Length: 114
Length: 116
Image (cartoon, rainbow over the protein chains, first blue to last red):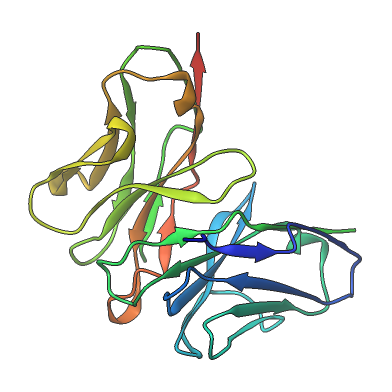
């Protein structure tokens, strides 16, 4: 069974550009969450999607957005990139939304903003 | 506000020695607590979790953790560390609305180095 797949693995952008990151959850998983990991702030929750609907949102500016498709694949978009957006972006999936569910993480997309 | 504190940024232990990683949390209700491990350039892997019941929980790779409500702690332990345990360890509390585990609050992590 394939794990959570994130593409691309590495990405280099310049300030002001926008970027789209992709996440394919484990087959059968319907919930996808996104996290930003930086050395200074650590792991911070971005948003969670379940059945194409955003269920939770972290404390990030509106430049960060996401969506989930009917096949549970998810994308997140960051517009007007800033240097501080350089981070490892991790996607995680669970089969369902309950607290008993186990969260599976992908290896992440390393975004560098120059 | 919910928060997780891992007081130790970096710990070095000798192979075969015991290990304890500290975690303190702040959460209004009964917490859902987790320990994750991250190897360099990789995502996070769940080691163990506490939802309710027995306060001593067993996880994968020989790890265990004890929930102490009076101390707001959830420390991770391993009796004998192996070189392959070198990684970064994250404690987390579930903050999900409506019971979702998708929204976790993480500590800043403890990097574990293992001396041969």
